[in-house]
Amino acid sequence: MLPWLPSQPVAFPPLDYALDEPDGLLAAGGALTPDWLLAAYRRGIFPWYSEGQPILWWSPDPRLVLFPAEVRVRRSLAKRMRNAGFKVTCDHDFDGVINACATSRADAEGTWITAPMQQAYRQLHRLGHAHSIEVWRNERLVGGLYGISLGRMFFGESMFSVESDASKVALVHLTRYMQANGGGLIDCQMHTPHLVSLGARDIARNDFIVYLEEYVDQPALSWDMYATSPVMQEITQREQ
Image 1 (cartoon, rainbow, N blue to C red):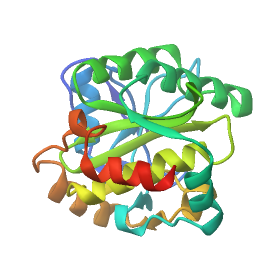
Image 2 (cartoon, rainbow, N blue to C red):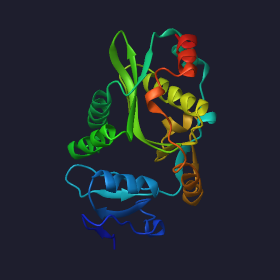
Image 3 (spheres, rainbow, N blue to C red):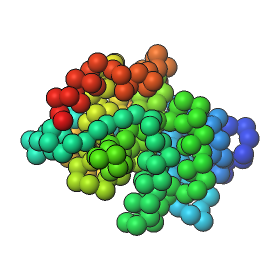
Image 4 (cartoon, helix red, strand yellow):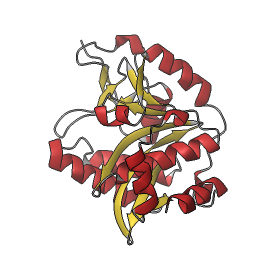
């Protein structure tokens, strides 16, 4: 039987309670407050549910991750990054990114980025835990991603693109910033061919937890310095 979590105290069952089918479903209930969400990410758990469902918590096995140094930039993507006139920023329009992610998911498959989820991650953004990477062209937001940063980990939540390759550009910039500043790992959560094509790979959940315990309590990445990082300025100048 799936464990039902009360709204308090914050407590999750052990990860080996997670179901094999559907893969990684661990528990239901709890709340989308910062204490619940941060405790979940620190344990390798994330919320994922659809409108009309209770809050569902997941920890799949295997886990899709991207090591920043392993990002795969094909020749066509590198050319587009150089020639498309994209501008990349961090935390300039978190609301715009999460709204666009919710809208694009709803158009494609019915969104799990419900209104309560959006509210919860906006609160985490105000507290300095959630961050967005924006891709602009001609002052228009054309792609981006958002997620949670804890220590040297980035937990990717969603990405969107309204122009070809714009979300890939956001991810490449994220990996390069993390690589230049000691970032350890990007959690991609669920297996998707799109992310695998960019270098993400599956690892066992137990191995993921080892990385998590290594990176999550290390000194945090400085997101305030993202836009002014000499490395990012060099990348932006080289790729425009």
